[in-house]
Amino acid sequence: MLILNAVINGLLFGGVLALMAFGMNLMFGVVQIVHLAYGQFIMVGLYLVYLLTVLYHVPLLLSCALATIAIALLSVLCYYSVVKPLLKAPPINQLLALAGLWIVLENACLAFFGATYKGVQVVLPVLHVGEVYIAASNLIGFGVGLITLGLLYLFLNKTYTGVAIRAVAQDAEVSGIMGINSRTIYLITFVVGGALAGITAACFVPVYAVHPHFGSAFTLLAFIIVILGGMGNLIGGFIGAFIIGVVTSVSSTLLNPEIGQIIALLICLLIIILRPQGLLGVRART
Amino acid sequence: MLRVEGLCSGYGGFEVLQNISLEMGAGETVAVLGPNGAGKSTLLKVISGLLKPASGKIYFEGRRIDGKPSHEIVEMGISLVPEGGRLFPELTVYNNLLVGAYNKRTRRHFKESLEEVFSLFPIIKERQNQIAGLMSGGERQMVAIARALMSRPRLLMLDEPSSGLAPKIVASIFEFVKKIKERGYSVLMVEQTVKKAVGLADHVYLLESGRMVFSGDQTSFLNNPKIKSSYLGI
Image 1 (tube, chains in turn yellow, orange):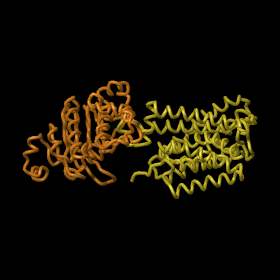
Image 2 (cartoon, helix red, strand yellow; image 1 turned 180 degrees about the vertical axis):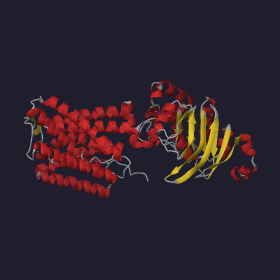
Image 3 (cartoon, helix red, strand yellow; image 1 turned 135 degrees about the horizontal axis):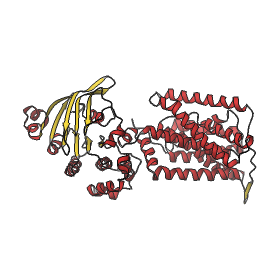
């Protein structure tokens, strides 16, 4: 029963992880960069919610919405200041620049908010369904995650801009001769990716207290999920998120949370060794 | 309609095109022929804005277009079918056509363009929900031509439409090109399959190692003794 509990809560948490990984995956698939500071965007989002709710007494839902918008704007700033100048640079330069942004964001939060844990006290009930205990926070995260991903699916399949984003991800050069300005698409992708980091932060509010090193674990987790599913493969990332959600939840319950992280990393290593293209990925054409 | 003057271009210091000039009128079909590596594809890449010229000028309908980004050049009415079609493999045929009509000038005419393309290639209408990457080479080439037409071009450029296709399929692709030509489009075609391409062309250019070595109409091309021996095998 303990394991069933962990599996169900892991699946529910997988919904938020899917949302988080989707943002990183989208930016990799479309702009071809690994967004190393992605978890730090989530961290800044959590700090913003804390700032607005606790220090300025803004209602929680409103401050979540404001934080999401602010992170989307931060993402735009990141695109113009860090990513755009390096679009044609070698991948290692892009990686280092984003790692730099990671350090900047961490230390800015350390300077501004201090090293202690900050959190919003949200007390959510734990629901009993038969003998299974479900944390309402997980349920909310799952619901928000699935609804957002559903809307994204419609956006990417049914709107002109969405289809253009997928076209650029598949062949940027040919997209150009179809009349698509890839720079505009990159910008839109960063807005969407930033908003996803913001929504992820909102879902994390009832679960986690934030501290300046909060982000790195989630950058890593998002990266593991993206690798698991296949870099740039959105459906693969979706499945990968639920696998990681369940694996970490079960191993945290049976052993402890640190072991959960280690197992997630081991899975990542195994995938890189045995199936580098990911679960659903296709090997890059050479 | 299209005028290329003294065009030079290449990749990273290596000059592929040397002093190329070319001219075509509205409604004409022009074939640029030549062996592998002569610079034919490079020429189309420069005209469509995928590659910047080192020097020279390109005019389209009186406006200078060289050096403009490719998404602006489509807007002006030039559309390129890249070699091998290069469809978006994970999109459906319908969404490939949708992306083809992306530019502002043509987006609001999407429905009309779609009807026109369906009337040209009825089979695409049946296949519109198929994933493009799962189609055969000939079908992909056909959809690629259709996708290029969705941008309502006045000049359609085809980069080796027959490359990599079985002879029977090649014949049907040239039938499509003929249909398109009959609808009044100006067509600039680059080819290695000499005989079929010449049969459709009003004017023929021959490229060899980055230089234009021949320019003339169908008859003078077919009767040129040097070309006869090296390209037509007679």
